[in-house]
Image (cartoon, rainbow, N blue to C red; front, side, top):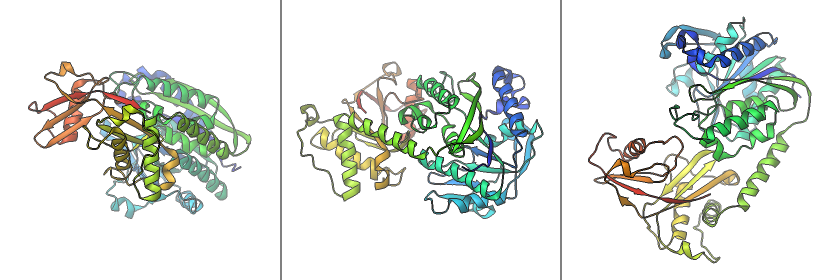
Length: 468
């Protein structure tokens, strides 16, 4: 076990808890502020040589983790009205290089953001608030160590965990004592006026994550249901996962310091102190994830099983799937169908038809499932090594009916279609964060390239039967 990690933790990053920004409003999160003081003191007195901080608000790549690779970085809270509050921090380039070297051969892509790459990607090299907010509270207690800044990537959670383990191993090779701090807010959907809208499952996610952190149930955290993660609208799970990976073989004393959500966003603060050597958790995580997915596969509805089989067959053979088994009579009828594919809670593809374009619902599912996997312009085509972790949902649409008033819409029950000329935008019902009919219409119009304020638009509503 690498003995490099002396302390780890989770910290939120709301700028409003900085007094120069909150100007008194920060007192609504007094539990958070007190816990941040305690966390700042613990890290500052831990004897660490380098702080590794993981942020979701730096340069984020879909297929790679990135590391700041300049001698120093600076930043301030100018965008939040407090330019006078900021920091200039040294980067531990030796550890950055060691992490990249240690990671080589793992299959996990890591980008070192040196000056040339910042310029190449059109990124201004600055400290983001995911770094600055926690550092504000560490520096109050005398913290003055160099940093390694890790920007999350949208990689599978197990890969993020393994990368966290690599970080600890690289530090151990250099003889560095490190603290590892995950900067992340939890659900952004705790209240109707929350930044991402309201979803009742946001609270469920936060309570589950904090309880598992309190018991340090790492396997359960890495196996949280993808649908729950998606509903929560959070930015903390990936930083947490990398942080947990740095503690992979450690026996840990966990301590939850605070949790609250005064403005509709969950703020969790926790400390983790290594107290001995244990076994690697990677194999147990893999087994638990495989068992959870196997159970999900066994419980699939007919439409979802068909969509998954069609995708797997096409990706492996390049040929369309032909149904040979008996088809339930209801799926021999015709209707529009949407197929959505997710990967650990993140959308991986979604394609659909508002009305039938084939001879049956079965054919519509097969066609749209393959299109969602291979032809969604927002994503690269699904590859064979992803198939085992993909989750599917199928929405079968009722015939669209015209509406004359916003009062006839209800986003939890009806989807909408907005049409003007040859422009058409559709939004499915019951989507996380969409809480009003006007918001639903605005999004559908934008998807169609229609001015959201344009009232000369034909509007249709429809219901869906959703299969998971």
